Amino acid sequence: MPTAETEKFEKFDIVATYEEFLRNDPAMTMPVAAIESLVVLLRFTETATASELIDILAKAVQRLKDGVRNAISLSAGCDMFQRFVLRHIQEYGDWEACKRHLITNGGLFVQRAKAARFRIAELGLPIIQDDDIILVHSHSRAVTELLLLAARRHMRFRVFVTEARPACEGVACAAELRALGIPVRVIVDSAVGWAIQKVDKVFVGAEGVAESGGIINRIGTYQIAVLAQNSNKPFYVVAESHKFVRLFPLSPYDLPGETAVVPDGGKHDVEAELREGPLLDFTNDSLITAIITDIGVLTPSGVSEELIKMWYD
Image (tube, rainbow, N blue to C red):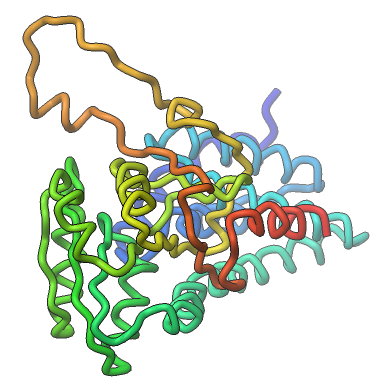
């Protein structure tokens, strides 16, 4: 027989809660929205034991991962929060006190995650020099925050932004940068080879940073990294540490839900194919110059060390 708390959990729509957080705050990242949703779940349920809470959290996390197409970034936040909960459950003998602590500090955890972007901007600022020409791919909030801080500090630089089809997120990035008077040119994705000779450095965000130090990001990131290395241009990743994910892909086909689709020669709706095509690719660590995070500017090999600290310290 299901318990009262199990029935209450069944009525709680974790995916809808997650999507509402993203709608209400466009600046919120997917991992933070996932953590916020799990904190709401903690408040909503009244579990009697630690094992019951752990079970409900695990089911909620699985529902989130199953209910969101691009769940890699979300997974990093979920896994980190589950580890956070397990660590604090082990420290408390009084279950009620433990739960109050989790709810209170879960909120503080979210606030620290939100503040990470501003910390990243401060740490990454010395990499930008006056008169730089910077290539940016798609729309990363962390990259945008770094460039906006540089503009506020009266640094002079210019930016190429890729259109980033199929979602064309680069257009939104360009609008934000132009609002602060930063000279920006939007280019089609196929023009990266033309632009790479003109730029001084490349900045990209990340949906997830893998254990190897490689990154999972919007489709097109890998080819930009290859062109940057071939042209001896530094390739920087700008990402929050709550996007470090316990995955070790070797290619984009190792990512959850990503497979190679071979054309069958029939007639198709091209626009539909573009919308349903791959959203993410994988860029291996050998193509990355450094990863600018809220815990420091890391080499790709430093990511695994930080993951060990997060999970086992």
